[in-house]
Length: 301
Ligand code: NAD
Ligand code: MG
Image 1 (cartoon, rainbow, N blue to C red):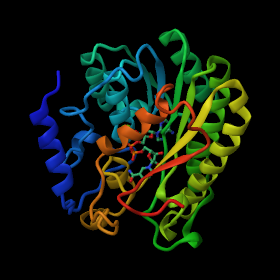
Image 2: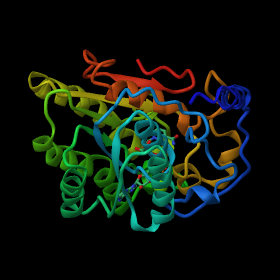
Image 3: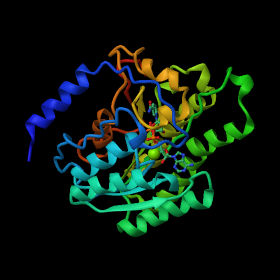
């Protein structure tokens, strides 16, 4: 069951990686297969230990990047999953589903644009109906745009709408819709960012949504605590996912992540541990209203 050699190989590859991706660009939302190199989602090395046995999770943006790593780890921990994603990401979603199914768990695919309120709400209801209930809600879908000439002056209302609707409105709608399905022992995990603490001028709108997600997380933890529902967030640093080449200038990829204390970008698989921990009703039973940074050493307090 434990492929120790695969785990050793993965650990060696991650800790000795120096980043330095080649310049590359994609159109949003970006696809995994077009990335060079293809990110590591834990396919070869995540070892499940039944920490989420019998649970059911909805992961937004679960087709690729961090969401895919979370889906694979959750499945190997014994959890059935539903993935929400944009229709043009079907190929990525099917790849993720194949890993979930190989782990012996169910995978429900729910394409749809979450910037439409009715779609966002329907995705939650469909996930709960098809999984037979819902225990874990992972609000991971997100969007940014960092190909502007200057900062605030170039920000259009259309861009502002897309970033705020994807990152905040959809998160509010979907969490609201999930509430009737959740019960004591359930948990909500939101995806924040290092941008909430150390904002880049090129991401002024995105960074503001991530700061708001932190605030939402602690406030909702307070509301739902009496019901035994925990609410937390994970704040990633620079992680090698389709979002990066799809939303930033291609020539910024070679130095992506090099400004962290660990000197490199992270891989999606390096986030999975934080999500599994927060989702585990046993291991994180007293953890609520907090944000775990997985940032390569950049401070989140
Ligand atoms: P990713 O591109 O793999 O995932 C983002 C996903 O969001 C997409 O796969 C897509 O399915 C979903 N999405 C975007 N707009 C949508 C819409 N309108 N409707 C439905 N789905 C939509 O990239 P990722 O980096 O894994 O992103 C996951 C989360 O991590 C995001 O919230 C992002 O802000 C956050 N994050 C990423 C980094 C990083 O460096 N990659 C750093 C900090 C935070
Ligand atoms: Mg994707």
